[in-house]
Length: 320
Length: 236
Image 1 (cartoon, rainbow over the protein chains, first blue to last red):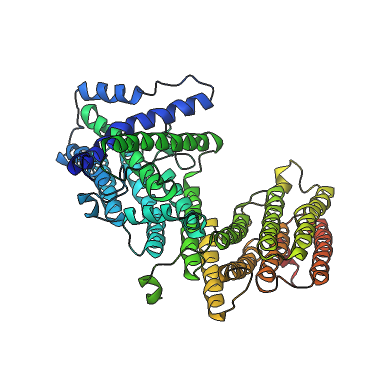
Image 2: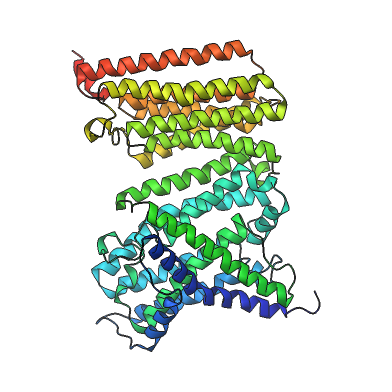
């Protein structure tokens, strides 16, 4: 352990990596998506330029909105900066603050962020922002059981619900990867992530059709730095969820096992590479399926619920 | 249950895990049949499910050194994944049921419940199958007990499919996939069953497929629809 980076620095690097790489991953996804559609597409760095431009613009608030409208983006951003402390972003060993909360704790903080954004949207009085907030909360309520069952699966597999423990279990043997409970839970979580990040088949990510919007409609009234915080926040939420899927469930390899500078840098590169690869998969899905009608989203969620519940069932007989 | 929650569940061996994954795939295909909207896709999903059972038979044959099972897997693939789907599709095409005309090829929306509710009901029924099978305490030398529980779930869920869907195609496919569930059960509890018995079952299935095809044609000829809901009007 000697000779490496100080542990608090590694801890900070987890947050900096997520915050810094998140817009880039969004850029990769929109670039790949455009290429698959035969368009040139925006630069991969475009989201950074967008954020820079928005931070320089003036901020306007609708008449009659209260402090909730302005506090929402900042509180949401704080939540997104907290979660990377709890999950294995760069290291296989738990960092000091990593045991502050388990998967459920991280989930609560992410829900808090989504809740304050919804409050800010409700505060505007704009019908579309309110529509988005109301839909996000309605469908959020039905994806929640799926997440709970995924956590139950993790708890049954590892005896704890710490993300570090599951990642270590998955790394331990090949038998842990092909067991049905693990595959089912990972698939269910992936479907929840498609929902949470507002991707096809739930929502068109880049569209102007307000009637189909869920997540995208919420920041309609925000402008300038506040809008930038919301955009950056949703990119960070996307990368956080990708990190949970990759570093806990699907591919917990390439993480640093010592606080050595070289291996930490390698872990940052590995995370960005894996997230970009997952982004490519997501954009292929984006281009291969049609958006579901709003009332068909329950069918999508029921499929995810089925996978998560079957994961717990198979564990019950010891065969999962 | 509390004892279960306290302890972690150790991973099965990679082979058992893989076999369980294939068995779960069979169950998921059964659930997928609730979602299919076209006759053609429903038949294809049945073929895919049958192919998965053959894969499982090959896995068992290779791992437990039961050469008979290779023959069974090959025959079951040829009959259930190729011949039965082809026979069914032919019979349906002759009355124009699988053409491009959505009036005849569309079986979506024939369920008595919405899709999400159907899936929830089927999950509850599958849970019943799972947990009752656990009480049997059946242990098999060739496949893990989970595969047996899954096969029970497949059988019960196919009943839900037959009950909930009102079109004759889904009911026929539900019956055929019920047989898939039973094949899965027989793989778990009686992998060493004499080959001649299994082959007899498989040819029975071919007869069933032809009979169903004819029944569907007769029904379509008399009711001019595929829905069994129209039959209720015959009651006096």
